[in-house]
Image (tube, rainbow over all chains, first blue to last red; front, side, top):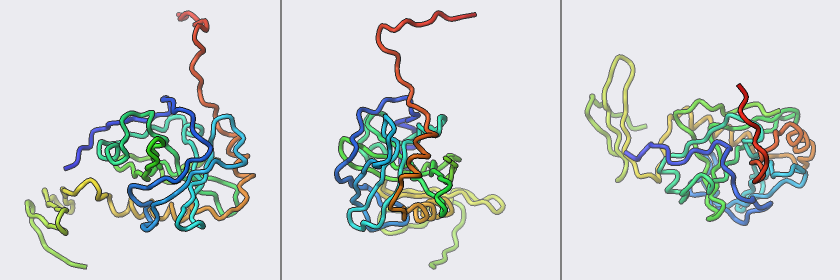
Length: 150
Length: 94
């Protein structure tokens, strides 16, 4: 059986180095659930994100431009959010320490744009240095799929 | 769907690299062990379905995210900054 010990814990207290406003093409090491054929994405900071530290990005498919996800920095909205990555995930993403990982959560805007929820169960984990990423389902935790942001 | 009947201790092999073992059966609960290469993700079906559905719903259809971005920026808490080197540290109070 693959190891399940936690190799990296990301709880928002580690300082990720300066995050660029745009990350040139990112390769998914495994597809996003529900989108099996898409592996190439770019990460672009939203124009309207005027916060001092980048909060909001769009993760856009290179292969299918209409597939784009609003993603956000979870620490800004969920003070207690902790992500533990097991050895397998760390190996797949070649993460050696917590600072290597950029953790973003997929945000869903309601039909009337009045409310937003975040998927805390399956964050997108990016190795910004190597530009590889995966949406990691945190099996065994009870983080919500739809946590209310606003 | 292929249907197989197994007893506790028996296994199923899927392809060349995946094995499912029935570890034990108690009442209506079956404990399964799964051996698979790390490239193969294994999840409870309902969890995987939930993430798939959430992703499908999350595909952004708005071209103008201005109002959403503005609202979220306003409620975000600022990232805690480490104290500047040399900054005075207040003594512990009883």
